Length: 268
Image 1: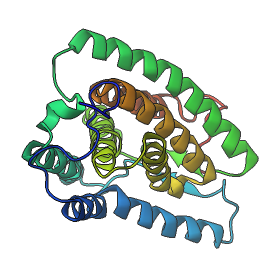
Image 2: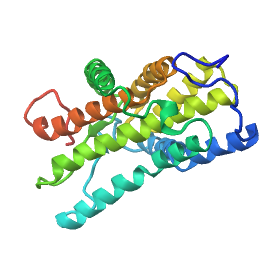
Image 3: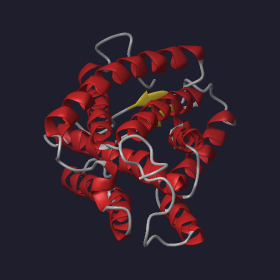
Image 4: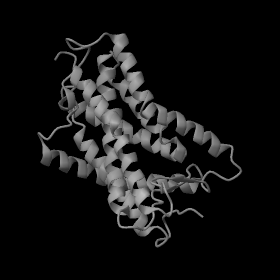
């Protein structure tokens, strides 16, 4: 299509699409029930961090915390429910893309290239994961970041499976909504590629602000890279795979190594 981006991203509203006002409202509502709301809460939490008596790095950003301490079966049920409900925005945007624009295939969320997508995702994870860890350690030592505790789950049989499922949920939700859906819709609304990319990256950084400025900056950089890759290839699945692998290594690595190696910051 004339005016499209490499990889088949549509340029302008396709035939049968709703008007710009309806499409703009759709985007705002999707973000309002997903990562736009998360960004607002993260900003409020960050204000709380800055106004607390403790230094930034002495405060803790806890991920994957126990939902029912001392009650492992109830805890497991709540963890599964949380993961499943967090995926609702993914199904929502795939449904909305299906109403016009081609559905999941329009953002490359399909199985047409499983080997290439997996290889590309693994390579991205290796490159971005190591760089991200180094950036976090530098930000933490500089005092710009909170101490991130990727898991506070009890040491029970389901801890690792839940952490892997949580990593997959993060990868699916963030890449499908923030990279795939948002960049397609902004393109349809007439946004230029660079402007849309910046908006997507800033949104990604905003809902990580609860981790501190390091979390914000690192995720903006990741958003710029992942967003540009999507704009050039039109495929979100490699990004989902990369994000899932990065978070899996972070979550499982933390419970395996925290307290056993000196270079991993742990809550005090």
